[in-house]
Every structure is written in structure tokens, then in C-alpha cells.
Amino acid sequence: MTERGVGRGAALAGSAALAGSAALAGSAALAAAALLVGCAPPAAPTAPPRAQASSAARPAAPAAAPPVEGAGPVGDGEVDEEEARLTKEEVERVLARVAKARGLPVLRDVRSQVLGRGEILQRVRAHVEREIPEGVLDHQREALAALELIPADYDFAGGMYRLLEGRIAGFYEPEDQTMYLVDDLSESEAEETLAHELVHALQDQSFSLGDLLRFKAGDSDRLAATHALVEGEAMSAMFDVLVGSAFKVDESMLRKLVAMSTALSSVGDTPLVLQESLGAPYTDGFSFVQGLRRQGGWAAVDAAWRALPETTEQLLHPDKLAAREPAVEVALPTAAALGPGFRVVFDDVMGEQSLRIAFAAYAHGDAAVGAAAGWGGDRFAVLQRDDAQDPARREFALAWRLRFDSAVDAAEAGKVIERRFGKACQRRPALGPIAWTARGSDMAIVAGPYARRGGGEASAAGTCAGAKTWLAEVMKGRAGVGAGKLAVGGKK
Image 1 (cartoon, helix red, strand yellow):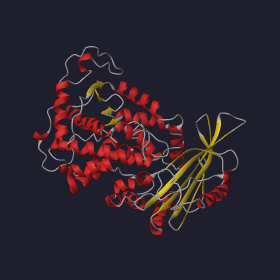
Image 2: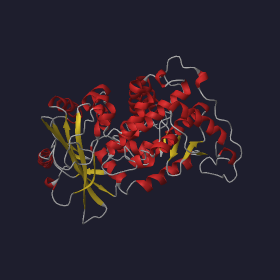
Image 3: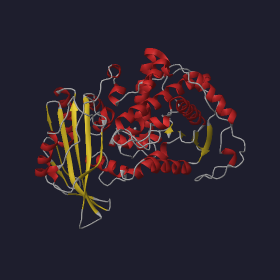
Image 4: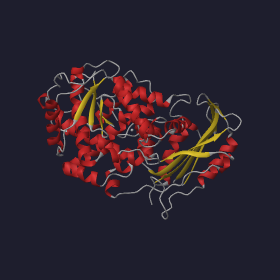
């Protein structure tokens, strides 16, 4: 499902998966987070930053819907029958305006329904359960916890659903080609959401969103790039309809307002990485689409749909998209040094967007952006070992291998890592040791092992001596090799 943007947004999510349009996949684990959040945007600022925006450019507020036969209670709020659906005329009117602004054809009618937040969340949960393999959210939690991006005992899935419930305004579901809106929106929020979601409906009719945003293991960075295009285009066309032109919107101010809208809300206590992952598809996507439109109008955006960005690096850097610069191939980290029994249960690519979101948890925003900009390729793995004597006890560990564009870029990233974790291995009471090293343009990080019983409280289960041996093993892994089969998300 694709939800409405600023008015929400994917990864460190690297971010991606409640999200994506139907996936919790976002970019990486971070992004994973965002993609879990992908289906729930932060409420958009009621007055987006703009210059000389005319209120006359905004569509009339949605009219009250007449009674609809067969509509009944839908969950929390017990939505009345007459509120269960927008009028067909209203949807057709706004759809025509959106289609004209975006330049996409209306190929079929768009169904719509207004639901209470409880029912909306139920639909999101059901969607995630259908699309995301069992265990993925648990493993994404371990990746984020091992890197101290969420607290060791944080209820990741529960927190994401809470964030989603608090910030979602609506979503378009490709599976049933229906647009869903929350029943408690203000008039301005309803206007924004209706326009935004109808852009998604047009995208689906022309480009088949369900296929493009379907969850695929190990493919989070590509999915995050596509998700950002989807949301960025919807933001751009929405502003064309609401304020006359998306070019009246200040991109940097929009980023600040999106961040503030969540930070100051009832779910503002959510870990920063998840908040950032929520807004990234909307803000990064909007900047991307606006850049394309400056170059060649909506025709340039149409061209991007025909040749989608393959990485979030391409999304964030127009020159790298133009050159179709691929990601460096990075081999899956190994863990022989940890001893027998450990196996890879989850692996993925963070990508530049998720790396930036992760670094923002360790350093000032500008430093995080600069350090992440040198990303060339990466791959991380979550490892697990079961306890034969205690079935409720499991050990987890994480290995992350990165390749930057140059040794200078790796050194800049190293400063961010050092600021958080120091130069030497640290032994953490809950999460075990964490160690990192860099050589030339390569970097490696290992964290753990640590143990959980029944998925609850974590406790250290490794030593710095073991971490250093494992770190050396991971650094020997292949990176930057130009021949052979590419790893998922990697580049020759």
C-alpha cells in the first residue's frame, strides 16, 4: 500500500516495508524500518512552505458523503454508513484535476473508502503479514539494535505500528485498487490526502505499483529508491493541484516541517532513525522529482519510470543517475570466527539513504550527509545461533562490510563511527562487543554476539578478543570485484 506523504514516507530502513507499497522493505534494516513505515506518512504540514501560494489554487474541501448501501461499522470509531465512502463525483472531480496536473491518463475509476484508524491499522497489519516473510521484522530489529539505532529492548514492530497509526492519513492499495482515507482528518488534511492518493492511483494504472513495490529479500536499497520516486511524484503533483505549482514549495523547509510534524506529535518519542525513515521517501523523493522536472518537465519523470533508479545513491545524486553508476559488489560477510552454529538469517544492502539516516543518529545532520555521500556499496548480515540446551535462548550478531568511493570518503565515515563507538572495541553489557576498522576505501563493523531469551532482554555473549578476530575475517571478504555474479544490490 502506498500512503500519503507529508501530510508520510522509508531506510534505514535503508530503508522499507510496511511500506513500499506493500512491503516492509525500505532500504535496509534501517530502511526496513522505514519501509515498515512505508505505508504511513507523517501528517503533512497544513500550510506547506511556499512563495505567494494562492488559496484559490486549492480544491474545495471534500463534501460530506451521502449514505452508501451496505457500508457498516469498520472498527475503532464505528464510522457511520454515510461516512464510509467519498462521493463518486467528488473523487472524479479531484481525479480529473490530478490527472491534468500530472499528465497521466485516467484508465479506470478509483474506488474509495473512509475508515477509522483502528480498521486502517488492521488492514496494514494484514497486508504486512501477507507480504513480509515470517521473522523479517524480528531480524531487522536485531540489525538496528546491534548498531544502537534503537534501544536493545525496543519493541520494533510494535513501535512501527504505533508510529504508523499516529501519523497515517490514508493509503492506496494496489491489490484492490482502492483508496483509503482516515476518518478524522481536518479539511486541509483531507484535501492533501485525496490529491496525493489519487496520484498513486494513476501511477498504478500506468506503471503497476504492486509489482514495483513488492517485497524482495535483499533488495531494500532498490526498493527504497523506487518508493521515493513514487512518493516524490505524488508530493509534486499534489502541490501542483493544491498551491498552483510545486515549485512554490521550498524543499529545505519542507524537510524541516516533515521532521517537526512527527517529532512534536504524540509519537515523537519514537527512535529518531524510525522518524527519519518515515519521512525520507517523501522529502528525498520530492527533491528528486523536482530536479527531473526542472530539467525536462513531467516527460523527464516519465523517463525515470521507464529506467528506474537502481540505488538510493542514484536517487540522491542526479549525476550518478545520468551515468547509471552501479553499486560496488560486496560479498556477504562470513562468521567462521564466531564458532559453529551461527547462520545468516537476514542480509541486505543499506544503501546511501539508509547510511545517512544511520549516521544521523551518531553525528550532526550535515556531517551524516557528507559521510554517507561517499557510499559505494555495502552488505550486512544478521547471524543467529540456537541454544540446543535452552530452546528459548538465541544468540545474535551482526557483520557489516562497506566500500566507499575513496579512502578519503572512508576516513570521513570513520570519523562518524569513531564519534559514537571510539577507536577500540567496546564491550557493551547488553549487546556484547562492537568493533570496526577501515583500510583504504574499505570498512567493516562487527557487533555481538549477544543473547536473548524468548525475544526479550539482551545480554552480552561475546568478548572483544573474539570480535577482533571476526573483524579481521570480515575485512578479508571480497569487495569491489568487477567480475562474476553480482550480489543483490551490488554493482560491477
